[in-house]
Image (cartoon, rainbow, N blue to C red; front, side, top):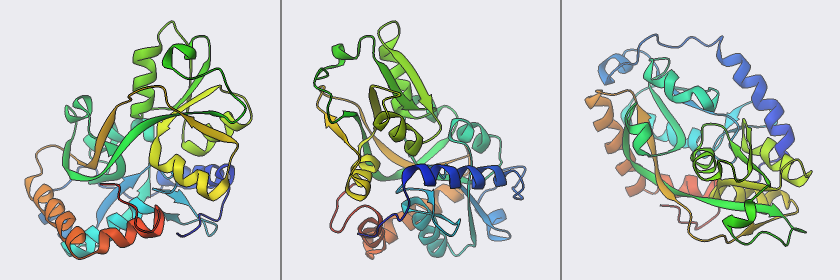
Length: 267
């Protein structure tokens, strides 16, 4: 498995630079269907603060699983691609408003999101997980969250779950990305962290923070898919065809092996 080469606090700081620069990148004022994209550049967004799916490396480059997926799909579609970051808590509104053509950003498919954007076929599956410090021994169920400081990433499904289930029961604290939230847990600024399982498990292998996953019962899982502006049928068809092709020819598994772990199955 490739190493991520940066601590999560360094990743977050570098991501802030990239996110701040996003406003200076030329983006379409209206999302296009495939014919318009073929005449220009396929504009793709992710958060840039979600290792190993999207993060900033030591050279200041936006890299990760989703970045490689975007490049592989663009190659199959025969289009040029530009991958850039956008703050997660406004990424759906930005897509729906036409600031870019697609979000290849590990976005979970939910009913609420489907009201604003359309989704391709799924390219992997993500589920919520609960994490605490290694020394914590008083949390084994959701009931034990009572009175605790519970962290989640603003705009993610974990945040939605925490808000819906924790009203009046625990104190929700939100973060802009996983690195900052993990730092808050390891330093004791929060008691509980709710996040998608795959990126945290990868982080555990790379950085060995003093945290552990706790089984609190069944938590939601969602398919992750590419989101695009509504009513772009040619782009939808091309993306689904390209997804099927990279899975068939081994490109997808190569990307999984590189960023998630050799032989990992996340579909």
